[in-house]
Length: 419
Image (tube, rainbow, N blue to C red; front, side, top):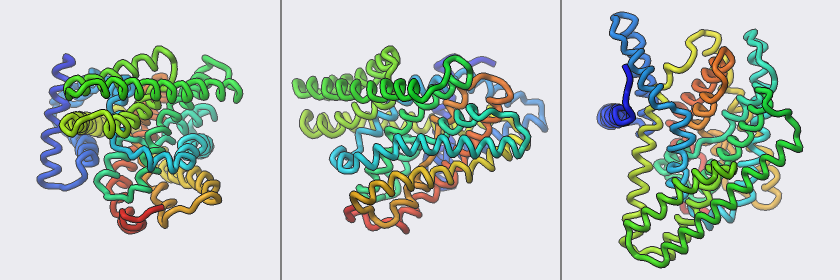
């Protein structure tokens, strides 16, 4: 069975609607988390049904997933919209007050976590008798270390966290995925033999891609702001933001700079400067409503597909065990990679009680990690790393995602508190 692009989109939206309704009506999990869990359970039910009866449902679902091409759909399509939409709602002034903390977490934190996870996963591979070189273990560290802004921002909005804490973790998540993608690309090129690895060359590429992404985002954001100041028509201003997202992300790919970072920066500028100074109340309501709705639709589709992707993983017991063992390794690396930047910044300013454990537990992994794992060369190695990635992501979304709100209410002061 093959699906046309329209049929694929129709099936995803219908499934997201049906499962979202069932979750809201009978289960009560947060919407995106419920879609991931129910999507995974639906895939497992399909496997069981096909085992009992020759319904060929697994083949149909695999065909659906193949027509989506999750990696390309997310990294070269949905991600630009989701990052821009998420950044629109982040308070820029609060983020700038914590720019050094956010910057260290998004750069140094990702690099530390990549190395720690890499060495930890090599120990797991040795324990389970998998032949995996250190570079490939570091590739896994790079793809699993960034926290997913889509998952994090959605949870924070429903958890009622204090603005000061939200600025830290939302800001980190918006930027560290761009950093993680750059580090992943550098390590993957070295692991596949396309380029020789050297710290100097890696640092140069990192500076060009990340720095170029920031500059492009600033240019796009200020261009959009300047254009919006000259008109007061909500349809035109919404089209301007769509042009920034679609045209800007395509331009970033052509210029070989970080599109995710560019979208985060542009979204911050439009969501703060343009919303405050270049829009009437009516335009502001229409524009933010449009992006909120688009964000909700794309989030629903994304987290459903994450759940359905259970069919893409290897089902071998040793592969699943590697994924389960990777969970404490990733959490431990997160704990250490957060501790060092906070220790550095604690000398300059204090932090509200509960910041450290919440940054560790609130660092959710999501679709970006799975999308990167799906870009690995096909074979036994991809099967291992993809399975480990999927297990870690599902744990992060289903366990951390469902408890981070409760943890925030217990560990953090009331939202009126100031850090």
